View 1: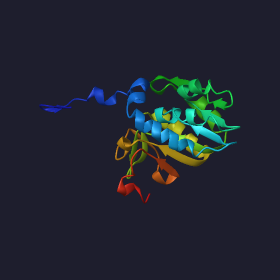
View 2: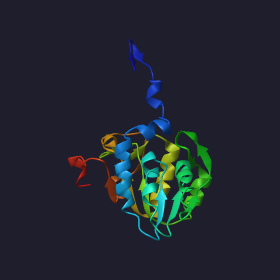
View 3: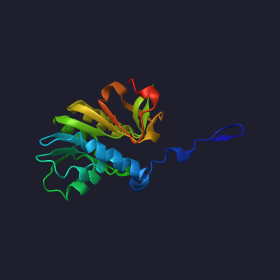
View 4: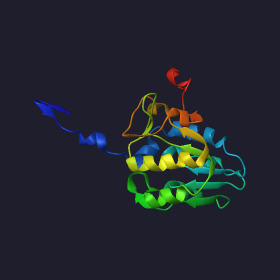
Length: 193
């Protein structure tokens, strides 16, 4: 924020929106993205579900999948998965990160890196041609990097408002992403990435 004779840090720009706020923002778009993402899951898959609010919406579209293993650090994913006993759910454990209701930290990273997955369904707070895939939390960015490392395929789930946005920390390049699912056509500049 500019003031006469100097600059004052704008505290409002550092506030991380609550899960409840993020769940209602772009709700219809997130639901459509989740429905499409579920098409990338087959019987017998081992998938990683990130802690994003779009990702958690996938679970309701996966109920017909057989022998599905879900790896997650997300408490909302775990909470929804409780209603579906056919899912085998592996939770990373670790330290609770309140803003996203997810597990993070060294223990979570260590456990995660011992596993393998066919597909990661990944959320982000920003997607940029120059800076790549970004997130507002440094500790969550480390979890996302590890999730990418253990996955054969990476599917990014982002609504159109995330494009040309750069958040605090880059955790992947666009070349690390195999599929992007969004609610509107990709911006032209991203089509060749």
